[in-house]
Amino acid sequence: MTKRPAELACLLMVAFCLAGCERRPTGSAKQSAAPDRLFDQFLGLMNAGKNYLDQGDATNALAIYRKAEAIVPTDADVHLNLANSYLVGGVAGEAIREADEVLKLDPNSTKQADLEKAADLISRIAPYIRKFHSSEYLSALATGEICLVVGYSGDVMQARSRAAEAKNNIEIGYTIPKEGAQMFFDNFAIPADAQHVAEAYELINYLYRPEVAAKNSDFLSYANGNLASQKLIDPKILNDKNIYPDEATLSKLFDITARDPATQRIINRLWTKVKTGK
Image (cartoon, rainbow, N blue to C red):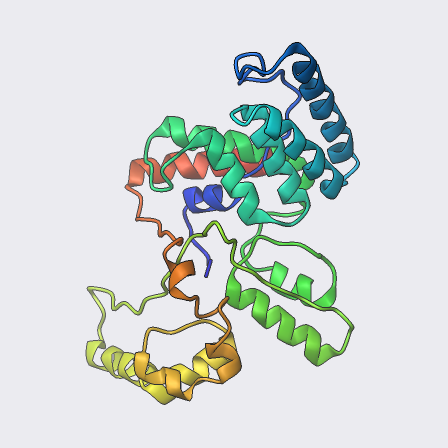
């Protein structure tokens, strides 16, 4: 259940996964009581993993970096390279977890230093990303123009439906990372200076009707908050744990709080830098 947070920090948490490194181990193998032979083996594995990663071979890169991790479990470069490999391999949740092993940041942090660390990690993989966009991927997935996105559940489900309707032999899947992801809520709100408040309430009441809410979930493949609607929802939608996660999955989801104006300006500036490289 990941959707369109406007804040950069949300995107940072989805994507701060990602770094490729050539540095020497930060958690020295010798400090981990490994003998010189294992230390040399560790460096050899790190170089071999990088070679696979440079070729876009995420499968072999992951296998190699996992061997390096077994020698020096706390090394920052191992986890950063694992994050990058998972990203190339399309496993965003694992990428987030590996990056988190290095950063250990609060997703709701307002500290500029934390935001800059996250932005720096994203910047390292920017050359591998075709486009940063919050909605264009829906059509691009359905037509086969792109094959991998970090996107929002309902959008990906809609892309899958479009591809099926087009009968273009494109199969699209979606999964919530087992480590967790950002949770979102779309809300109805009435502006304080609205001129037609009564009518606004009528619209909200209509959309909250169980039969209407159920139809919206069936069509958009997004869960709704009306418990009474669930008995009217298509079982394929209701029983899809990527749309209606079970309790185990929900326990690993997090949400993002609104940012104060000063923090939002920092986020906007950093996000522009990530996208433009300037």
